[in-house]
Length: 459
Image 1 (cartoon, rainbow, N blue to C red):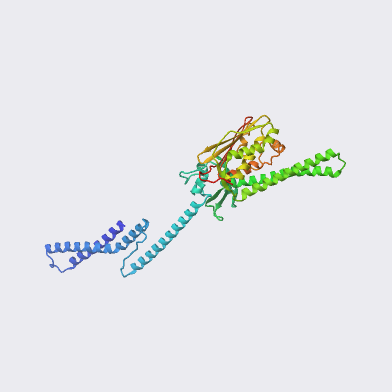
Image 2: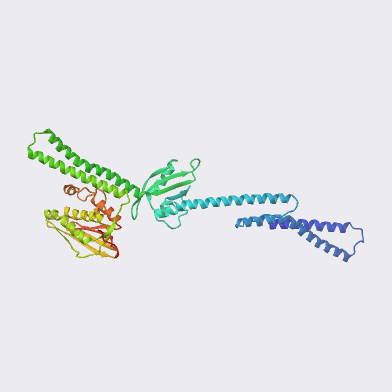
């Protein structure tokens, strides 16, 4: 711009000076004295300079305004426009430039709105989103991706393996280079708590040269766990029902064949009745567990004397305790009342005591303790039984899970009791856990709310 300014200025000055000199040279001889001539030259030069400057400014002013407008638009002052009015073709130029600026501002606003909408969508997604450029370097990730993979530092222009160090994810993304179809599969995540994500990855655009890769990751750890539990449940339920049914069918066919001695026929009938009772218990437990899992468990809260309830249960189980040669007693003489559903608490205690009887050898002991903890009561059922292996302690509350399947069936366990216990304890607002050592015994500890001082006792 400055070079153009001086070129125009020099041209105008040269023309003006030339005109002044021509006027002097063409004037009649003797028209100018020496001093007068000098004055005339000076005045002519000054006039030419002024005229040249005016011409330059008139020529460059529109260009200066255009340059200023460009700078203002670039710095975010999008309301600036050309305001000149020369009454010539320059006005048309200003109108065209202003329209171009208006269109540019609208396009910028639209792009910003779309960017904000995209950012809002990506930020609200629980799924992880990853976008790579054509060189497989990260363009963007959303908060869901950072949360899922535990990466919080700068990621742009880095490779995936540098950021998350999960070879399975890198292999998945590499596979998109061999096909234009989406690559979809479960990917295990290593480190810390193992998880499973469902990954969808595809090169984009769908047609033409690829410009990059888009991948979406969804945490399906719980979904896959539930699917496995469901499959195991169907398989286990089928097996548990088939076993007594097969026994019933076999002994019924034996009876139908006739020719049995009375004592043999009686043993067949006893076996049929025993297996029928086992099926009934299993179906009852299945229905109870289904109700607890699929409905909001209705609990009738009332003041419950836990010490009294435990003593009553120990009396009711006295015959079984004697038959198993076990000693059971309550270690707590007095304790605050609980605020819970009496029927649910009775079911929990009875199940835990029954399990203790089943899995404790003759001569063993069973102890029940009750201890107040702030606004809770902590109830412990402890035995000197066979114990639970460490790898099984987190699973014993699953449906049909058994530590010793053969012994469980021999003592009539359906494999659903502890699953029901867990649901009942949680419905009462408590928690349950187990501590155990092989060959030493097990301690089941659960909590229930403590009764308020002004709570009324049940009738």
